[in-house]
Length: 298
Image (cartoon, rainbow, N blue to C red):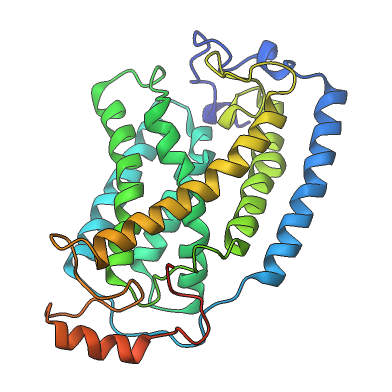
C-alpha cells in the first residue's frame, strides 16, 4: 500500500536497498543490539531529563527580525522543494532522515514566539549538528539524478548551520548552557538514539531501505562489519557533544569577542535593534542570568 513512498529508491547503489542490506545483520544480532541500546537510551533520557534546567530569567522581547523571516522563507522553500523531489522520485521515505526532521525543528524555531519550549528545542537541536557536518564530509548524492536536487542537498545542510548561528546572534530565548554542562548533550543523544533504533529501524527493516544506515554499513564506513552499529554508538557519542560545544564556543567568540563580527558583549544578550553599546548594556542587565548559570558559554 505504501510502495509509492519507497519504490523509487535506487537499487543500483550498493547497500542502499534490498534483502542483502536488510539481512546484513542477523535477526538475533539485531534484537540483542536493539535491546542493549534501548537500556542505554532509557538511562540517557531519564538521567538527562533530571539534570537539564532552563534559565529562570530570560528576555521574551520581540525577536521578529528581517533576517529571521528571510531565513524562514528560504528554508521553507528548500524543504518544500526537497519534499517535492521526494514525491516525484517516489522516495518519500527519505523525509524521515534526521536532517529533514531537524530542518522542520529549525523552521519552528524561526517561526515560533519566544517561550521556554523554544529554548529547550534550540538547545536540543544543537546536538544534532553532526548531520550537516557528515553530509558534507561524506556526501550521498548518487541517488539525486538532476542538478537541482543535488543543489538542494548542499543548500539545506549549509542552512542547518547558518540558522542556529543567526539565532544565537539574536540571543534571548536562543541561549545555551555552559560548556561544562553536559546534561543537554546527554539527553539529546538519548533522543538521537531513540529515533534511530526505535523509529527509523522499525520503518526501514520491513521495506528494506537503508535509512540513515540502520540496516547495513556504508561501503566507505571505516568500521564496516558486524559491530559497525556499536562503533557508531561510540564515535557519535563523542562527535555529537563535541560539535555542539565547538559550535557554541565558536559562536561566542565571533559574536562577542572577535572585533569584525562582534555584535554584543555576551552571548545571552538580546541583539538590540540599534547596534549601540549603551543599548546592549541595558539589554544585558535585563536578560543577564548569571545567577542560575545556564545561559553563559564559559
